[in-house]
Length: 237
Image (tube, rainbow, N blue to C red; front, side, top):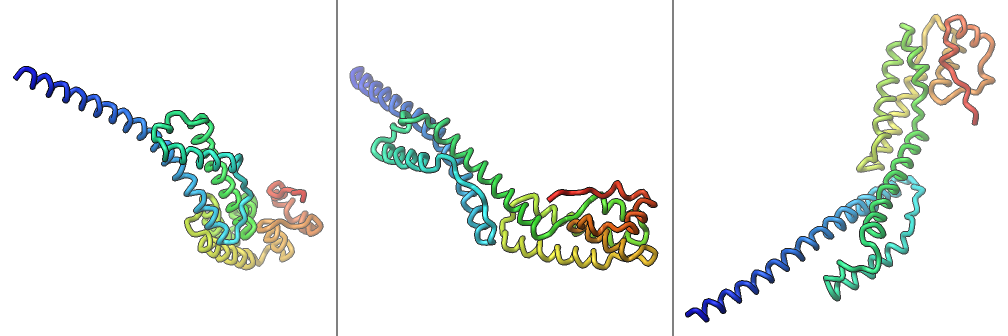
């Protein structure tokens, strides 16, 4: 009886050691899995963003740093783990700093490049104009309603430019629509007691910028008399 109990106790101890070792392995592999899954999620999201922008005709100036090296390391690590799962604990390179962190850095820089490309595209499609000039025009009662409409359109365009859209094709179409509405609103901006050449100059300057040669002495005198010249800026190029 005593010998039988001793054997059972021995078997239980062995089983406990196996379970304990398995738990340690599970915890270790779980940590690695979390590291890889987050990097994989970010890289996958970046691929989706780049593909969507390409479909919309938006080029993104982005080249992954050390992409070929990381691809080789991923293939090598996958082959080693397939042969022996414990190889995940002793790869031929620093797993965190030379692999996972590099993947995360690529994902972050790629997303930043995608956002820049999207914002530049929105800016090319719809110039939002000068906020300072709009502030001045808002003070003129004759123009207030039109300026308010332009402000609302401008706000929506800026909002669209701030984040990557899920559907860049649809978002681009919306930007074009808003740009046309804003251009029409600028074209309708009028006031009977403001000279036509002044209105034309202000429309052009506020929407896309006006050549300095368009600033005639009559326009300059009108703006100076109303202390509006400081609202305009000279831009080179």
